[in-house]
Amino acid sequence: MISKKIHLLILFFSVSLICSAQKIETKKLYFTYSGRVEHLNGNNVILIGSASSISFNFKGNSCAISLQSVDLVEHHNYVSLELDGNYIGRLKVEKGELKSYSITVSKKKKTHHLSIYKSTEASNGGVLFSGTTAHLTKISTENKKKIEFIGNSITCGYGNDTAAIPCGTGEWFDQHNAYLAYGPILSRRLNTDFLLSSVSGIGMYRNWNDEHIDEAIMPEVYENLYLNRTNSKPYDFSFQPDLVSICLGTNDLSDGDGNKARLPFNEDKFVSNYIDFIKTVYNHSPKTRIVLLNSPMVSGAKNATLIKCLNKVIQAFENDKQHKTIALFEYKPMTPHGCNSHPDIEDHKLMADQLTPFLKNLLNEK
View 1 (cartoon, one colour):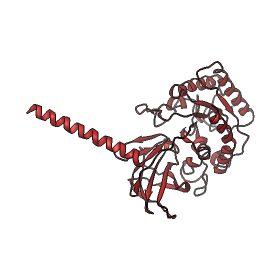
View 2 (cartoon, rainbow, N blue to C red; view 1 turned 90 degrees about the vertical axis):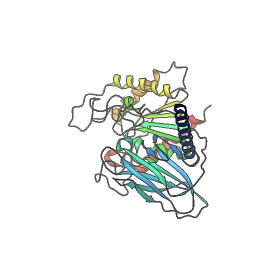
View 3 (tube, one colour; view 1 turned 180 degrees about the vertical axis):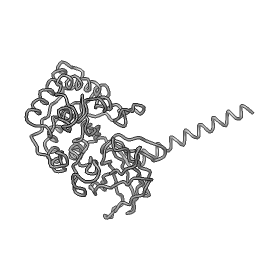
View 4 (cartoon, one colour; view 1 turned 60 degrees about the vertical axis):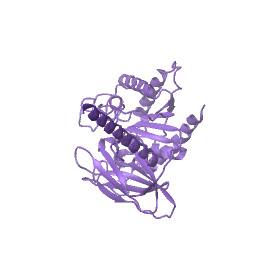
């Protein structure tokens, strides 16, 4: 009797493994993912980081998707939609329970391709994708070169989309559109895969309005899937970038809100943390080429200080024969037109215009 029970348990366990494997295989056949995402049971996926996405192909002209904004406190979120290679706008994912959202399909084609990108960032909570009513067809992945963009609010696309909600109204994230930030724009131009590892207000040794007292800095959150202090869910670094672009320093150099105590900028701390952070990046992506960027939101004496510090960081690796030479890119001075002195969509396009040929040359180097 005991032997029979053990046999049944083994059989049950084996069937469970097969079913689980089939679900994973189904995901691979019908969905592709990019960015920082968490895979749950079935086809459920949480889009976490800015511009993280899920894509699928479908037949017919009918498509609805099930989405939910998931966080400790109920609030709305946003996703950007791309249908058949064309941007069709942002969708507000209302707070509350899982809801179905219809996608308007105007062009008659045998097969359509839909990509759902998270417009908001990791600190806004996740967007749960829980399936679609569409008639799915198999999807294949193209082997492309890869770029990771590490940064702060600029890289997140903070305050860039003011078409529907003007600056100064609504929630602080109502103008977020990571799909139309410089990194994704550039990546679509170069036909590369991309990953955004970015958090608004974050710095290399301190943040916009915090002296590294209450808030985590980039070196502390980078290795965590949700880009926060919770290390119970580490990021797996399966995305191996050919290039890593780092655009940090805006918040380290900021004066904060003018009310909270702010110490003078500490060059030594900034450079030291930056060097250690690059070592962390190399630890996870040893074959990558790193590019350091200054900031389109920093000018004058502060920009000169930032460039000096970035050159010090590069000099620290001048005898490194293990990795490719670290490059430096300097943006031209810019007057941002988005919310809170951030770049708007047109500014992000200009940033992409400047950076695209530089990164293209690096990607083409042998």
